[in-house]
Length: 151
Length: 389
Ligand SMILES: [Zn+2]
Image (cartoon, rainbow over all chains, first blue to last red; front, side, top):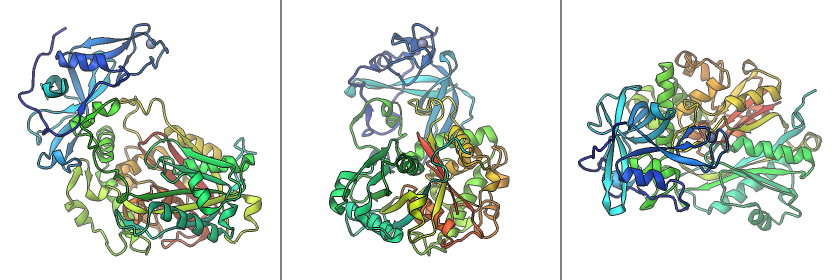
């Protein structure tokens, strides 16, 4: 399995948007810890091996409470996308348009993740095309975002 | 005989709404708006508001039954009900719950109500101002996916990809609502017609939604009073009889971070099946339909999932000709709905469905026997209602 260490040069969207904070109940601590290490993990049931994302406290398939984090390759496919033109947050004024993609992960049961598609916001976006994860560090908040780039 | 016990047993006997305002335009408080609508609906029915003994609402309405009942001096409240879930998914669900309470004998007169003054409280269309987000929003908001339009555009884009169409359908849905609103003096967009050129020329909000694919944000309130068909006979109005009311959500539709297994959906597949089963009719029997427009793409998918046309036929079937109140195959959103009458979270669609049964719509369809409402596409749960004359 290849490790993904690519780091975005600078944040895709301007500062001032809310940043993730691991849930106080600990549900997704493993996901955000891995992202900080520039690794992508997906929750997986230790009993029936079902993948699920976002994280849940129980396996939706077999109801086991024994869930773990499974490292995946960081390669995905664009499942859907949108180009945002209207800013709904003060920090986004002047930052439009930007691209949001919904990426499915074929090596993790096709679970999906939301991120930005890095690069030109006017680039042609093709559903089904391959993307790879990159990590956007926010050391001030002790967090990293998972972003996507066309390959 | 139906297995469903609410069928043909409950009627809508009173409807009312306040003046509808642009967001921030209400000169009175949200609580006053709500009280005005409830009193208006009681007057329309010909009952004293103090006789209301059941309250049902949805989408976490801020005006809770204990406060309303105290303010109105209701004598004995025997049913207080909130339909869980956000957006307009609970409009018909609250109606279904009211029906259940009436048939079970818990209450005699149940009011379904919704009050909204987004100028006095938060807006739906703005992103969170928090510095950090946790849980499900942590997987979306930091990437600038924060508003309902942005959440639902992702689903609609996928539907358009799978079925290779939908832009023309979206346009027809928008133009229809604006055209019908021009006949309706209650409508916020009355006097503001929309041309096909203006639709095409409008700015993108988030692709594939342009400005006029999106609902408004408004201030106002609406209320609907239901009772049993026996009591309805003695009241003032022609009753609109409930023949089906269903609610629900497909398999894991609320899975976080856009992980619903069936994604390109309005979430009506199982709910619609139950609806038709309960009503004992089929889509071709529907005379007029009010389908919740948070965004036009949601209406498009709702109509498909209720069986009005196939998913690959949306641009052929969904035309302004077919949606016209006067002679269309499926008269749609005849008051102007959330796009052009008022974003009353879809309760204005239910009052309009009742008007169509009474024969008092400003875009009245001829000889209405079956009048249908679809509440809240793409949220979880969603709900449906069918009324008959
Ligand atoms: Zn399992």
